[in-house]
Image 1 (cartoon, rainbow over the protein chains, first blue to last red):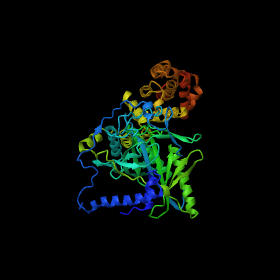
Image 2: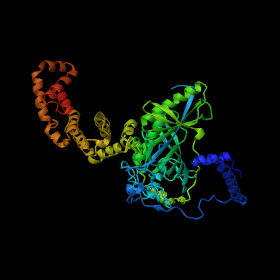
Image 3: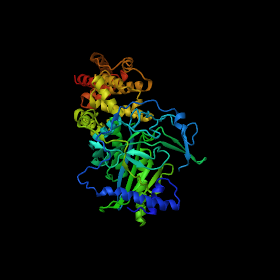
Image 4: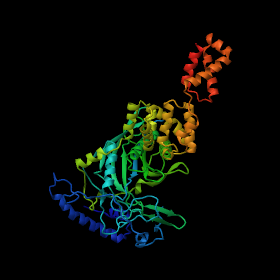
Length: 94
Length: 479
């Protein structure tokens, strides 16, 4: 499956990745070959096989609606690259 | 509005579910707390954590599905919806995509014309809410609060079935009322726990294909939903009249200038790259679970309304008023329960006297100074004939304004004079003192009856039992 440079640029934009022109070319080739490899699976006869999103025949466990103590604000904010006393700070988005 | 175009509206409603904890973690779910005091490792999307689904959130979502006649999927799946925005800590929102929990439902709405219209519910799926960003224009930065991130939501998607802003608001109100009756959502649009996005397009009457639709966001009251849709309807009609093409886009409602404004065009529309969330196994519901939830559903507004008409012979209008909020219908039920009041009398008093007084003060029924018990006692005195309708209104005012006890008000007022001996004594005195009127009455001028009854009322300061006074006056005058 051929992934061209435009497609790479589109995916990069959606993923907020800044790529150089050389990287775009290199990833176009690499992504194409990865998809070619995975598309080998298309050769298998899958008629009558249910689409599977998990291999285990299990259903999701449910949890009782009980609240536990949340993180302290200090702990919550600690790993943010930028924050003040109350909130995470990010570059202006609007 | 009569134009060449037919308006097509579909609504997407997000309702926050009233659970104690968030949808995928034990983090408390509450509103109005200080920023970032309600987070945990799952809410913040820290590496290595796994979501565990809240059973109550599932139960609430199923309740809404059943209440809106949806079929409930026994196996549904969670999917990741990807977009990058600072309010979304993981870089994706856990939602449902091609296998939502509820599908193919409907609700009925009442139209102005008195007709009922059925609006389709395409789907109801579960998802998690995002955080909130606060923009600081001066400092060129935004602040992020994750208290709301991970709060359970249901998204209720209607069919493109509404044909006017009025219908859209009617639909929204019915949904809102059902959520409130189920007690699964606070339903406060201003506070954002009940949110509505509207899709609207125009097409020529008779044309089969839909026109290009525009999505309107940021509408946080029922009134604004109506205003935004009317504005957009006119804007699109003008565009089409001018031969221009409608662009598929998202527009924001700006309530300060009363118009919708373009937010982003289709060119950079989002590509969410949905896929099944590997962290969550399929949600499987057994028949027993579904039956248990169905059996616990409370009486819904439509059923209640029909019951009021059928069992109490209330008018359609009165029963619609009395079931318009769960609080009001509970109030009415409580009035009936405490003293066995006559349902029609109680309906009149609740919808006229009580709602009238509350409306004047701008108070909701929850803030009523007259408890259902107290209103029932007033009605009890009225029905037993110990006070007149006029006196009952005075008692009501004293209870409403001064928080007085109805029984003591009735006893200080001296109650209604229903003693025939006392009334006869007064009547005979009046007859003796007004021979000219008596003569005329006996000569056939029977409308003078009102004069005699009025005299009795004057002497008793309005406390004479009017029915009894009438009967006695007729008997005495015709003697």
